[in-house]
Length: 209
Image 1 (tube, rainbow, N blue to C red):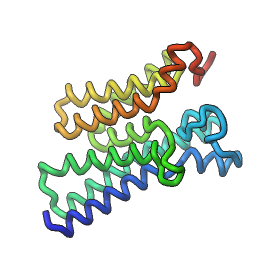
Image 2: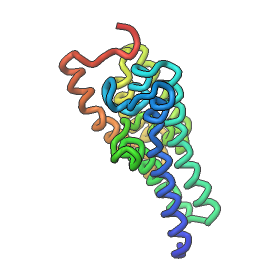
Image 3: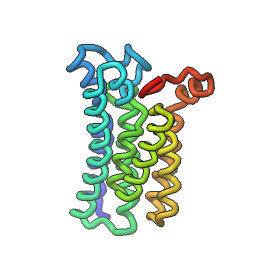
Image 4: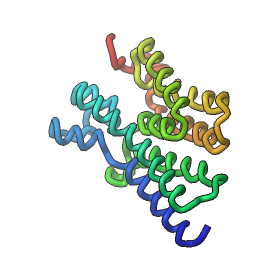
């Protein structure tokens, strides 16, 4: 690849991070309730805390927008790599780097002093853009576990682990399997405080008692 194409792709990857870093939950909580969501509930800026603190509508909006951030980051780099004839062997790796940057951007937002959410929704968006059958399967796992446990953190972590399995058994490119493993482990690590509360029996239910 020429230097100019590499520069364009690097600029695209920066945009992928910036897309992920849009602080959706923070902005919605400010606009709707006039609060800094980091000072309420779990202190997290993700959709779950917005749901609990601000309300169902705001939480669903945050979830959808955060998911679209992951989708948009991957689609942008897919378009760029196609427009500039990036070699087929390289394209999957370019896409997964874009996805990882969006996930990191969500949890380490430059606009919030490199803090943020736990990246589950943005990660799901990345999966949907990379391999939609895997993304839909992971979403189904999340839905079943959430309905059973009534706890978003449990659903998110099980879904993250399921993503690794589905990428492997469906024969996706190695790059996609790598990002599923890296992204899945990152999501689980971002839930360390939830794991501690689950062990202690103090993790709040999202739905029901």
